[in-house]
Image 1 (cartoon, one colour):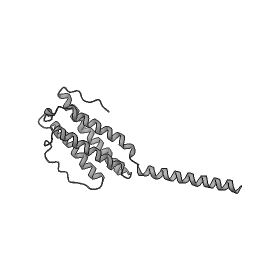
Image 2 (tube, helix red, strand yellow):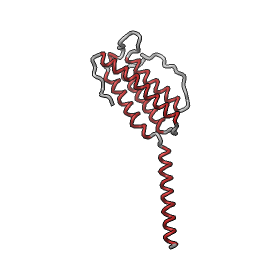
Image 3 (cartoon, helix red, strand yellow):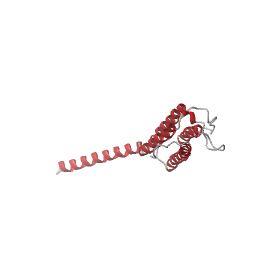
Image 4 (cartoon, one colour):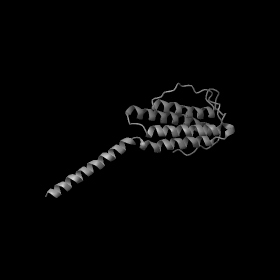
Length: 163
């Protein structure tokens, strides 16, 4: 009887320990579930950047809007700005010349900024305010990427399939 009780107690302690370990591991990666959607947003954004020929990066449908290059830069720079906000090291909004980079540089810049953002997100402690910030980043990115899709269509270029 004593051996059965000891065995039951040992099993219970083992299960509690395993449960605690799984809980702690889950808490360490609370935002791991966002890695997929953020990676999809990155890939789709890069595909939109890639769809426009380099020689057409100066295109803008009307005088009162950004060029395609400036839209691309705005997306990449805003990712850098938002990332700093999310990690608690805000930087001043100072984008500089939005038409200063070529296609290759912009693709590299946006890729690096998405990768940095993903790293920040999956290593952050979950909170409502942080989640709202991440959703704001995605909403902002979608808005400007959508504008770029319109630029592609205006030039007779089929945009990448929506993801």
